[in-house]
Amino acid sequence: NVRVIDGSTVSMPDTVENQKAYPQPSNQKPGCGFPLAKIGVIFSLATGAAVALCIDILNTHDIKLARNLYQFLHPLDILLGDRAFCAYADLVAIKKLDCDAVFRKHQSRTTTMRQGKIVGDCDKLVTWYKPKICPKGLSLDEWVALPPTIIVREIFYYIIIPGFRTQRVSLITTLLDTTTYSSLKLVELYGQRWKVELDLRHLKTTLGMDILRCKTPSMVRKEIYAYLLAYNLLRSLMWLAGTTYGVPPLRLSLQGTRHHLNNFIPQLLATSSTKVEQIYRTLLKVIVHKAIPERPGRSEPRVRKRRPKSYPLMKQPRHEFRRQMQTA
Image (cartoon, rainbow, N blue to C red):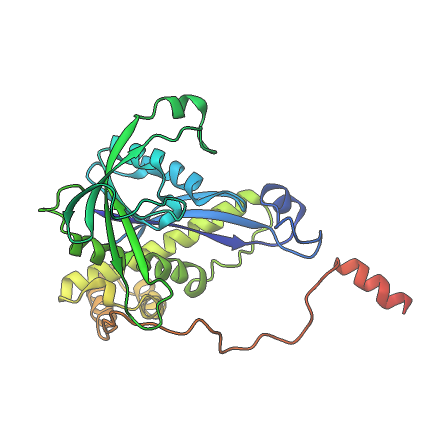
């Protein structure tokens, strides 16, 4: 099973309780911003469902969130992520769980293709050495317990698709068997990492989790989990509909599934128990009616069409604005 990991942020109402638990960015003046929480999520690449979640404050690094999520991995899982997660200690931790990782190499590592044992075209085995200084985020005992070296596999390739920002990629993986895991298959696998961005977009934009409404930290956390429950419900419907009627589940529309479910809920509640199964089968058939086409290599300009309102940004608390208006 391939799991995809990534981090994001969610906003919430500006209350004293929320600010204390999830403070706003330090460069914003008090009363001019909103509390922000950092979330780390692991998704299933096969189904798109969310399998694990971690919530913390804004300035938490993605790798700290990931270390709280490794406990949800199962033996033989493969964890897929960007270069924020590519650290020596994390590769060791994942291997101890009998799992493997495919990450993009962190930009701070400067190894070249001349180093290591060549095992294929732009494919090599490299020995990584334990950091000489204890990294931030690790305790001294954890750093001491790290092995002195690990062997990883590095795959280097170019991206020549017009419109893509990234043109050169170095993958680091613990999948060392070149026969079972060819370099081409691993490159294709990392190309699917982008699906985690779409999953987060569905959560935050399609379902509306980007801006939360609860006014206390405990209710904020419950609200986030409620969104995940609704999201996984839609993913389960897409999976059942696709596998029942021979359509790839990931090619179905999550927003369309949401609309169809909302339209069928009154009928499911009003019908007798004997007809529920028939209406449910009809719902699955409607969901697969229109699949989204596969568009590999698609790129779009990073611009926004919808213009924001031309009001100036708030640079001081609202009560100070009111005081100025009254004295003017």
